[in-house]
Length: 137
Image 1 (cartoon, rainbow, N blue to C red):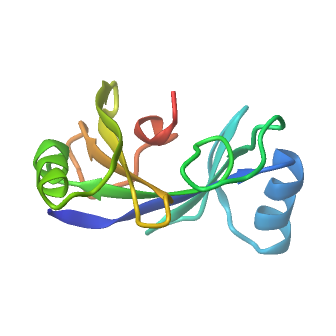
Image 2 (cartoon, helix red, strand yellow):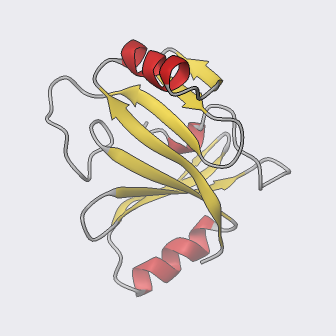
């Protein structure tokens, strides 16, 4: 399947400002990238990404708006999805192409979402800016 490494862990939070304060000021994770509804924390390796949870839904597995999504960088998202389909893995969202690369989302046995992202940029081992490929839109 050619998993390169864990790209990020995406955490839906009730209060983005409080969570930024906690993870940045209390825990000490530096802010790598920040937008209005998305913040990446960390310096290297896997990043912790925060975004606001939906206020209309309870937290649940299998839901981008509330819950945790694990993001993997992959060398070839199409071959990864083909291989996973053959193994009976549930495909939550098939491959979509974005400016930063190709992205698909699968579910684990407990319905936690796993994002598979094939970046378009030259150094495929590095993190993307803002994780456009991992966002639910």
